[in-house]
Image (cartoon, rainbow, N blue to C red; front, side, top):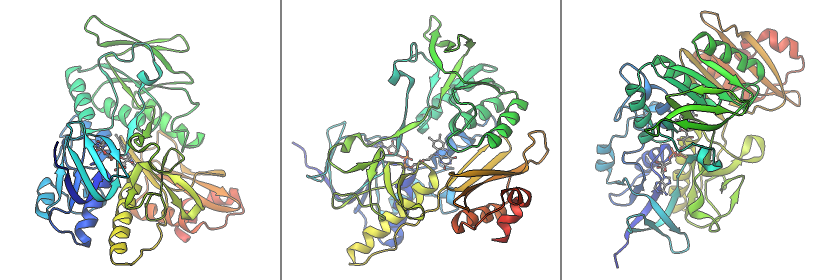
Length: 435
Ligand code: FAD
């Protein structure tokens, strides 16, 4: 029998949302000992996007404490000492294996129990593994996935150990694109494999993708589209040696990196809380249908007011903002007050090589490509608008200045009318700067 450790607030998960929630709690006023963050990871919350970018650079790679939250949004970096000063308990390297929302208690793999008055679920996503589908040989050594800092360390070591190696990147999403770039920077021979007709098909139009595929090809990245990895062979040490493709081709590989998507980590709460669209259903304050239980970041399916629809968003900007909104709502409720509804404008970005794009809004409807999307250009700058029901609802821009990125954000928020598509293509960015 052991006594439960009791906290007023527990944040379950120690990722991006957890860090931003902690900062908001500190801003709103917190007594020492009121808040605990419980995390499977061994480190304080950090800016996860760094893992597929600067963390793997060949020269002066980013390392903690350099990218703890909230440095990614321009705020003060929350070092472990910061939590200490605020009396926030960081309970690290602790995986919760059982959650009982009715009893308000959590149990760790080590058998400790924690109870709370208010719980914020911030468990994020987990990667989909090829072993989940029983892909033959997918448990070989040197087949990597990337979600947490431990994963990034293993990949980094393999990159260092296998100088001038051959790598196969499975998946053409943003993880696949960012990792292919950083592997190339490490002078590794890279082949990307994905089944779709172009990369990042969930966001990119064929016109946008053509630029990135051309640019990557110029950097020496080989791209094989329209097929998938169906098996792996290993050497006598159990290390991956070959990737077998569905179309019969066989690729040599010393390193394989798989980025085929993620899924929200909601399994602890199955049957205990209402779910929707694969996530935990919340209101505009990130409150679930269970009192005193909130869900933020990748796991939350929330009302996206701008589109009048419930959505789940797996991007860092939303993980920060949803965490802040939940904490503001919790604190206001304690004083009998309310806060304004969450009114989110979707914002995604990615960076690789010398490239950097931003996207705001909704990628639905007809599309218009504008600007210089020649991959050979010295300073390519191009974008796309999405037009639905005669209004511009989404905007993408590669190579924009901070000012120009603000302009496209404004377009996506304001949704100005656009009748003449050809005219819009001609005007390009100047259309956005007029809004
Ligand atoms: P996470 O940051 O994933 O944190 C979840 C935490 O919960 C983890 O620490 C996990 O260990 C912990 N946890 C889960 N279950 C348990 C348990 N049972 N017990 C204890 N702890 C638990 N988004 C962008 O917009 N732009 C980008 O460029 C970008 N790059 C990315 C690059 C990589 C490599 C990855 C993996 C993601 C990237 N993202 C990017 C997405 C972004 O990082 C996520 O949307 C964001 O981290 C979500 O925050 P979160 O707090 O919901 O979850």
